[in-house]
Length: 110
Image 1 (spheres, one colour):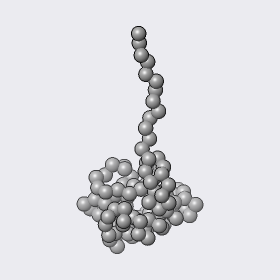
Image 2: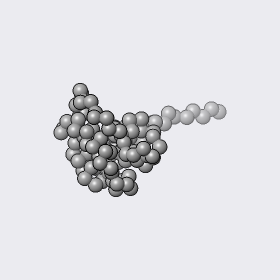
Image 3: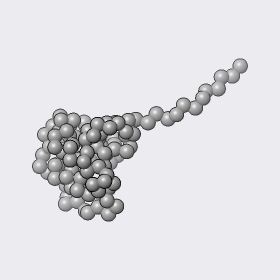
Image 4: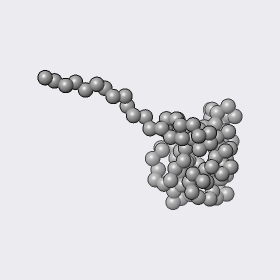
């Protein structure tokens, strides 16, 4: 007697946006990490350190930078780190999409 296993749907990790509190697939959010070199955007999603997730929506970034991000990362945000994060936010379309041709960063740690 053989037992066939039914294919289980692949588990998709979900995370909550600290701006709007909506839970979505981890890959659809931007991870910001507090590591030994400061607070920065983590494009790989795998950098070591305490992380927080934010939609690529300007409204979510505005809320995050107004205090939710510092609280989530349990850290103060330095002027240099804030400038780099605001630079990223400035490239976002108010409707939520990232502009296709973002301006080059001014040398921040983003």
